[in-house]
Length: 454
Image 1 (cartoon, one colour):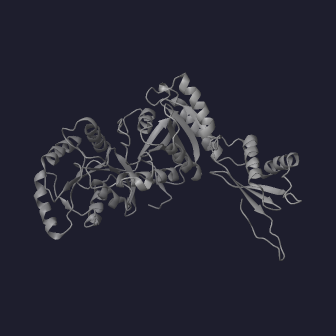
Image 2 (cartoon, rainbow, N blue to C red):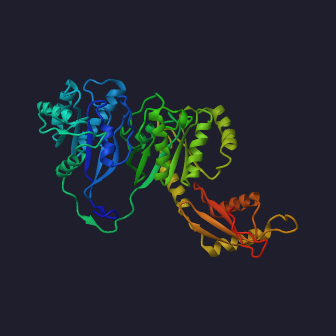
Image 3 (cartoon, helix red, strand yellow):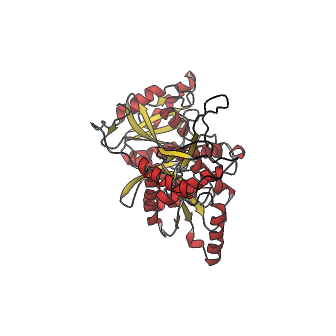
């Protein structure tokens, strides 16, 4: 199927399940052809069901990575096992992964019973068959009663092509292709430092347990893509692992997760940055906000846990916002509680407003008419006997809006900021960063100077 054509119906889903640490995430990375699922030699790194886009021989499908399934799991492990079972129920095909170096365990046999109850087609994978003799060991897995085991090495790629062929054969028939369909759901990155309530908010807006919630900071390790209907519209939410204090001080899992938070912001159109309104705005919060602004994404700041804010805290918070967020006064702010549901319905209108600003275009005529009036009322200060003039301006692009000022010479940084502030006052751009750059006119002759950017 050509890349620019989308199927009309849902893309088929392949769930990868198995007990902890059999190499499910490694296999998912092998299937999608890039290192995206968090992999570490510690059981239980994957905690939620995490979907990724995959393609093989021109067929598209979604592969869902799951946390380790265990029959008698308790507490958080039970929530993780439940996510795996939901993945099985919603899948078209299940890939059941067993560690060939260990053989079939009691947990594997219990998993087979769960899979039989689902009545889904199951492909049995004997992973970690890194050489010929381990491949022979796979024969013993016939005892599980799931048919022929597929010996593979997810780490080295042995047998993965044959496995993918078999997965395609087991998938339902692809739906017909439709030309030029509408744009997909808007992409929203849900970001913030650990334990500000990102997973709770995702569960609240999706009205189901999509992400494992735990009061232990940093429970979410992988980003979880979720299609969520909110205020009558479908949105694609990415719930990301919380950013740690310093990437280079983080452990392996946290390092990859923090990189992926940056990746989620890059892949999104708008970021909802969650701050804990019951705590002071921290350096970590500032860093998350900087990442969004530097990536040029639309921005909504959601002050979560508003149910914990009393009058004293509210007064302190107002002063903090004035001091700590003064460089982004244009960000849209909403006060919510993911726990109680307070004002969560204000989130979708705020996101729409931010996206509209992010894609706003000012007609060149209106822009220059406004700019002429502005520079006549407040000309650039005189420096060394002369003042540079702004000749005209143009909007070079959107998402985010980018403006170029053509001038007779470099502008003072302060004057450039003044123009940017007035541009917002006149045309809005609430919830979106804007970029203003300066192009001084080229001078000719020996004292000439080339282009410069402000």
